[in-house]
Image (cartoon, rainbow, N blue to C red; front, side, top):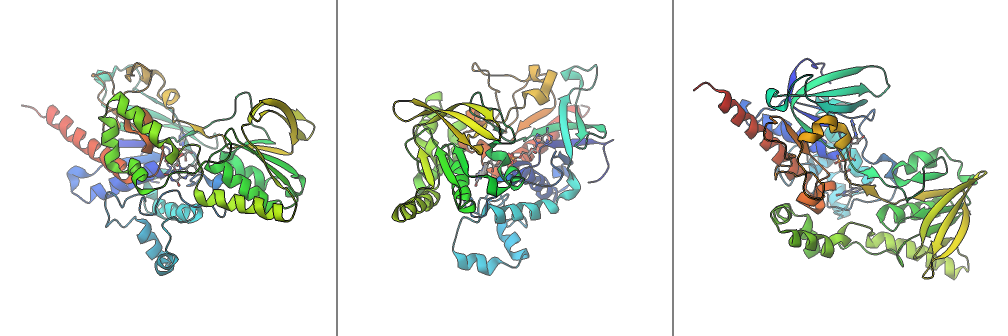
Length: 440
Ligand SMILES: Cc1cc2nc3c(=O)[nH]c(=O)nc-3n(C[C@H](O)[C@H](O)[C@H](O)COP(=O)(O)OP(=O)(O)OC[C@H]3O[C@@H](n4cnc5c(N)ncnc54)[C@H](O)[C@@H]3O)c2cc1C
């Protein structure tokens, strides 16, 4: 990364997952359209290197979207940053086509993302955690064209401050645990799964439980069943069985770019209908292939008259106690909510995530950000938080806009279009501000 902290950037991105990677590419491509479209950007990422949900890169896990919904193709089908360009560069394009599969493994998609980020590496500062976004000392929003970001070196060694006209917050989803359950060395959240698993001696894992009814839960149950042939694997699910993710063509339209407008400009009633009818495209559901894969294992065990995969249906975790090296989990099991205590060597909570929450980062600046009657940020169509009119800087969100922009907010489906819209908005607003400043 270039050392230009003294400069004022047009935009600084907080977090460098796929969303801001897609934006970095959109800025790069915008630059090719002439100097007036050139945006000077810098991105901070707290991880020491690029990583997209590394702890869930399970060997057989596949993408839940088509490879064509990559970082760029929906915005610019001829982009050199596409998944197809990556396949071409890595010499695998013919083999990929022969494979006739729209859904690459997550490991391959991760390789694509790493390849893409390496081409914009001069704009990324890894090992850098943004602590706060604020106005310059002693200024009011109407007096400042810039915001300051305080950034800590992840090693805890030093801090720096950078200045920017716009900020794009893309810090990702926040892991969620069952109520009253704390993480420790035997109670894991799925977001830390592989790192924790690799630090554990598999021989010690004889009874493991996976809590949750979504894709990650099913994938981890399958992984543990396969990796630990000596172990009993318990799937603790609040439903009566894994429910299938609706991936059929009409339902998939919910992820089309046009659906964002339908959601954004729709009434409260239509927005509610989006969630009511189409939640099962993504939330607490599992890919058909993974469900069948698991069921095949259960059935094969039945034929052998053994049972290794146990389903605790209609079951909730209500508490966890540590007992020596074991973890005693209190459960409310089955239709009668019978209370049972079971001991496990490890409890994996694949209990999902909360929406991105930038309030803490914004600190005092947050009072200039307007909220709706439910206390959620009001967000413009261009993903900018609606601020008090005197605020001249833009605070954009990539994520955390489910209530305004719909189901794709925390997903990859619309990244290419969204990042293009944000880049365009930054260019347009800068041009407008320059016009306003020009002497009459
Ligand atoms: C296991 C898993 C699989 C998924 N698979 C799919 C899929 O197949 N298709 C799909 O559409 N969606 C999928 N999703 C949804 C997921 O949200 C998106 O894939 C994607 O991660 C969103 O990208 P993002 O950049 O917005 O957030 P993230 O990928 O979460 O990136 C946010 C980044 O911000 C960094 N960060 C946070 N705070 C700071 C800070 N203060 N300073 C600096 N850096 C910070 C984090 O370290 C992180 O790298 C999946 C989610 C999970 C958990």
